[in-house]
Image 1 (cartoon, rainbow, N blue to C red):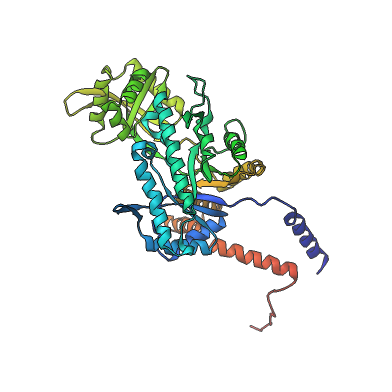
Image 2 (image 1 turned 120 degrees about the horizontal axis):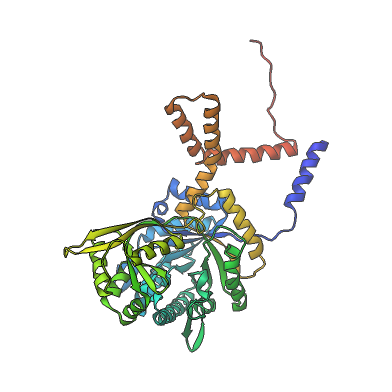
Length: 493
């Protein structure tokens, strides 16, 4: 081997043979596994995608159907094939499900029947085709009860009771059990000064997320931020949970990041007194029940709350009922309405606010605010280059690797992360094509330019990966002196 090749080999050895801690594989929320349950190219491409992005744990949503006296996992034969292939490729797969209402004691039986369904499926499946665990994403803070402190504490105690039962049931069957929690339950409530997520459970007063760490096998922090450092960064928001997990001894902590965007049109009524809403929630008032069923969103504004529900054909009638229950005044430009718009702007999640007067079925008129909810850019990596996402996660992981309890990054969710990955791969080619056309005018016809832009996207679906493999093989051959063009025989024309 000549001098330059030895220099290349030495450089590679210095870079790659340094003793470094092995980063754990990542987890991925898979909310729609249906396209991958049947054997075929889609399934193979999905597993290839996961391998490329260092994903080793899949939280895959299951559907259960009634099978008296309990429930069973739907499409069990397809799951057997999927799980067998996943395990052949050394993935762990946990059955995923969840609903905020499962936190309520009245819904515990429904949630526990899902755990039983997974256990029943595993009992009938060969070892290679069994689920490795159960993962719940219940998020009780999405319920209207969360907005009344006394009901919030009771809700959290019931939530802990559910997880205590579910974890015990799962473990008896040899299944790992995990849940998702937001990072902010330990933050201080500005009204009471106590942690937002504090509750009393089994005689001990504690933050619910800390108590969960003593119950479950793994936990996913919904640490949805797009920068690693700073007081509002990924590292800062995960630190307290990781420290508490170290004290809990065995629990493993995944740090979740967001790649999806939620978008929806809402209609609001403004100016409901916060105290009146809390009274309605605490008493189980029918209006509060209706708002909970509508998955209402509340915008806080001092002593006032502004209440919105998703736009629909009957949204006006629901809000008219709310307005009557809380004795709201009519009018299309009153103080409460203007204050509501200002509060929505401060939240940074609402856009396109417009004041409208609508007519209800009872022929009455109601002033409402129409607004569009969009996941804020500080929460999601959607629309950002994959390189930026990877750089921020690499920075965060350098800090997280110091914690024994750290299990890895968790990415929410597959569909959006796939979009982020493909857009990054196509970006450089797309820019090159557009700049070339602007500079040379070679592809003046729109049809030619459209074909080139389409090719820039399609090349990421196999060709780019194959080209990278050829490059690796060629590099190794050049370093070892093997390969080459072979004999080149000259021939006359």
